[in-house]
View 1 (cartoon, one colour):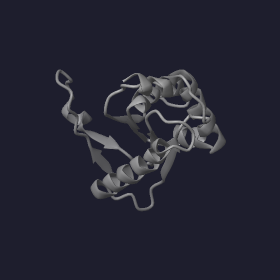
View 2 (view 1 turned 90 degrees about the horizontal axis):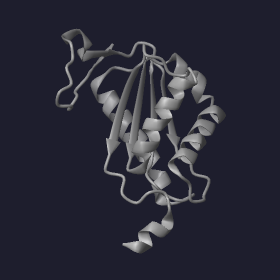
View 3 (view 1 turned 180 degrees about the vertical axis):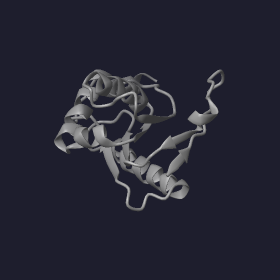
View 4 (view 1 turned 135 degrees about the vertical axis):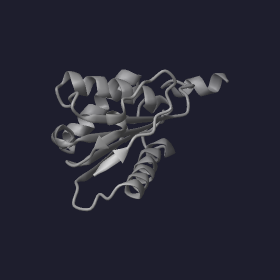
Length: 160
């Protein structure tokens, strides 16, 4: 079972043999929302991203009998937090749901992120490599939506 890869990245050169992604051992989808405090609607975005990503994956590959794990990540504790604090929160969330062990065994990790979650996701992936959770043999797909405009502090919105 192989997932065709479509990339929009000017100047990126792919070998023909690199145009397919092996997903035999399964897929793990992570979704990270943009800035939002605690129980705000921003947290619900992670769940929406999971649903959209799962639907898209099921549309293009047959995943029957293949592990498919999904985890919405927030990294928020209900207070204003920096990006690095959110990254640490996401790591704690992954440990608490046994996500770290699952991540190590997957061929493909698909990360969907929005706004500030885009920055959080890139730093999170770096930390997961540093911790030895992710390896170069895995396929990492990162979809970042929108821009990072407001930062992580509610007071910033009052200054516009």
